[in-house]
Image 1 (cartoon, each protein chain N blue to C red):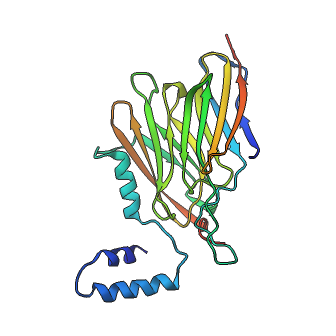
Image 2: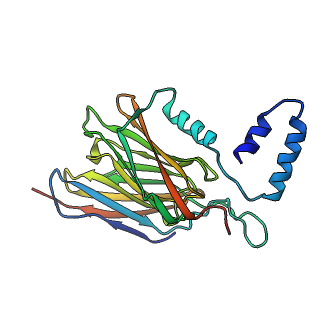
Image 3: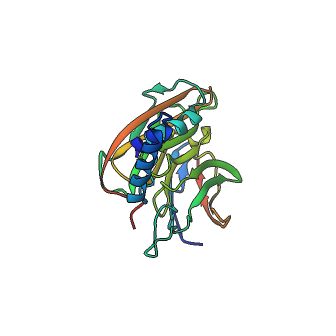
Length: 157
Length: 107
């Protein structure tokens, strides 16, 4: 699908023919609604709002291999004392190959005492998931983790 | 709407950070699946989950279709005093399910 997205963006003389070909490909597989890593990057960029993310402060805890993509446990932990002076305000989770790049967004405060959230998510296929955190001082941090999926979710009947 | 399961320790000593676990019965239909008639099955998801302690928001989640059916959330809370925890799930049609539970803090 990433190739198709590339094709529809090209404007060269061969673009019409390429568009027609990609159109055919879409007719052949009309049900493959998938986000692309580029869409994930766009959703992440919206969260980061131009700030350069730090590495190492956010940790994704998920199984490296899940049998059933319909329900994969994911825990996001952020290294923060969660005091009034220094705490996490937002945590967002993204994926690159489900139909939509967003998974969830959480709001936290010093009341939580610890910066940690667990949920269960759908995974359409083997892919990287990305977690981003925003701190009260305006800094941001990210982490990515690859999950291998043997039974996909989302688009099948 | 549906059933909800809520789990947290109580009573707990003052200042303890407890884990609150919630599970809400909901299909979380993504809107990306097709039925046997070839038509897309309409989206039906919980869009927002919020936890309040004595009326003050202590945890909030915005959900997208990538959250699994029967949305599960676990999050920490520092227990400072006894009070009422309220949990609310709101779906895309505005239907809202509320559960309440009492947190008892000792010491």
